[in-house]
Image (cartoon, rainbow, N blue to C red; front, side, top):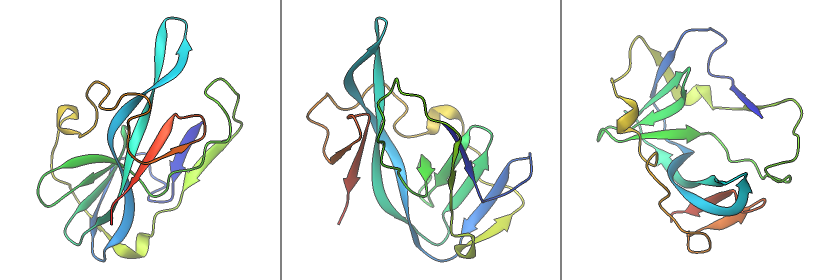
Length: 148
């Protein structure tokens, strides 16, 4: 499934500063699944629901959308996490457009620099199957953690 968003229609990277707090899902890790493609295990994502605070930045790049916090933490970000109704091997047609609340963002010329190694949750699986906190979505491929 291809993901698009409403942040920009340009081909170039776009950078935004958060001016009003809003909820966002950030990828904080990965979880093993019980599904395999050949000898390779399918790895799912663990998302955490948190608040993007004023002063944080949203980077819409060719590599994805990232939330860069004022503290310097970098997360892959989603405006929502879709409920997966199909398994990993079932065909999904079309694309999914993420709707970001652009009224709470202001465009900036350049964002804070970071490398791929700085992105949280991109290491080896951080949770074992069955012990990841949160609610399983679909076939155990994505899990969401709610923070209160």
